[in-house]
Amino acid sequence: MRRFGAIIIAVWVSWFSSDPALAEKRVALVIGNSAYENVARLGNPANDATAMTATLKEAGFDVVDSRRNLNIADMRRAFRDFSDKARDADVAVVYFAGHGIEVDGANYVIPVDAALERDLDVYDEAFPLDRILATIEPAKQLRLVILDACRLNPFAKTMKRTIGSRAVGRGLARVEPNSPNTLIAFASKADSIASDGDSKNSPFTSALVRHIATPGLDLRKAFGFVRDDVLRSTSNRQEPYVYGSLGGDDVPLVPAKPVLTAPANPQADIRRDYELALQLGTREGWNAFLAQSPEGYYANLAKGQLNKIASEEARVVATEKARIAAEESARLAAEGARQTEQAKAAALARAAEEARVAAEKAKQVEHAKVAAAEQARATAEKPAAEKIAAMKVDAGTVAGIDRTAEKAAGDKALMEARPQQPKLPQVASLPAGTMAVSPLAAGLLIKEIKIELKRTGCYSGRIDESWPKGSSNETVRKFARYARLSSAPEEPSAQLLELLKTKPDGFCPLECGGREVERNGRCIKREAPRRAMTPKPLSGVARADAAYRNGTYRECMGPQTGCYSRSIKHGEDHARQWCSRQPSC
Image 1 (tube, helix red, strand yellow):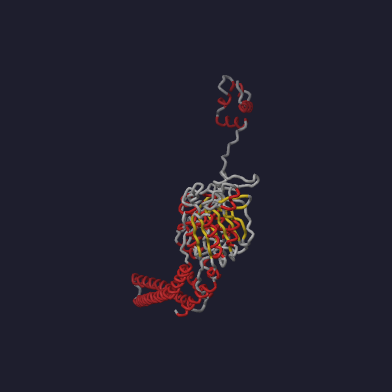
Image 2: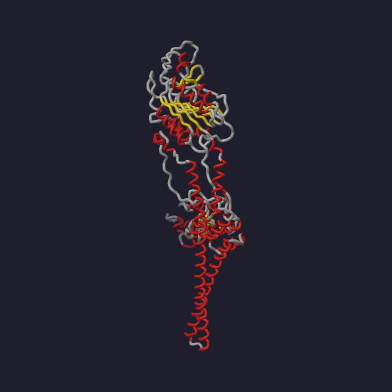
């Protein structure tokens, strides 16, 4: 127990001291502008900022500065204060929800007090994207700007142009960050409009809070999931876009969940082989196990299992001998044999019965020994398993992994907007967790599986240790089809063997080809149907001979008067010729 506790402590210490992700400083500034003073109010940005703030806090960010409805002065002050927090940060994130505008290829986010009567006013009344990028420039590992600001710009229609060539674009303009490890995410790609949404949150933010804080998920993949969700929820009308690039390593916004693994157990492979042999329960299985692992704790258990099998076999033999001896004694008594022969037979019957009783007792003793040994094994292995399970639970608690996608604000609306998938019919499946076993035990397992497959009628080949791979494993696919498994097992397993044992003989019906028929449990070639023999028509002479033999010359020659007599008076040969031609008189 002390040794096991020391191992656990060592694992915990190494985990806390070696995980660099725990030392990262992550900061975020979240702004939601809804209450615009000079144009119509936006409904969702404040809600979107609330959902994003909750998501980042649950993700364990060190600083989440959340602001609402900032005018230009407050916005300048907020970014100035945030630049100090980003100076020593590893990850810096800025999220803005509200109106944005593009003028002459430059992007700006709009405070709530902006009027923008002229195009020149954008330089004084709006906040440039370049200034936001400069704010998070000091961050060491990742700089991320998320703009849910591609909505329809209400200032564009009323804004006066001081220079005719100055362009005021639709949506935001394409941007390429100058700094490495910088990403800029738009709710909709350049020069297109994003939807504010009909629910509590915009489609873009609803997808963001679902995916962006997934532990260990690379940001590029997370934004890919966001894109798919938004396209689906907007019927392909809005496509989010990400500008910038990252390196070859995964860059998650939230580090992957730390997982504590149990110390390696050198007896694990032997234990798996032992449990497989225990499921087989045959002398061959235990001999194969002992050939692989002749010494040690599990070898002693295996020898006890062999003694149990031997005691059962001895009991069966002794019972049969006692039955034969009793029948012989009864036969001699019934036939009136000599007293000496009867006495000898009775003595043999008594001895055989005593041997049977002794074998029965020996069997009970061996069964009790094996049951006690298995109980002791289970008791010894249970505390270790419980400690490992408890250690994994504690690791999850320390990591603070309790967040689920359903807790994020706006997720419920997104889930309701998605079409419901049809339910598929339920089919049986094998339990997961195929045991890794030694080659010797695996060969024995394959033999046992083939024996059961042959018994169920699913296999008719040789009983050997080969296991067909891929498309050649037609036998197992046939069994899986009739057993209604979701998929055919690719590898032999104890679970497959146990499932086979539950099926009756002839479980797989005989399948014959198109040119075969089933006969006495075998497929034989179908015989071609015999064509009826059509008798050939008789020749004229043959018909005449037949008429001559049965006396039907008159009918053959016809009913006309004198026709028969005119023919017959010239002789029988002449009559035959006339009859063969069937003339009419």
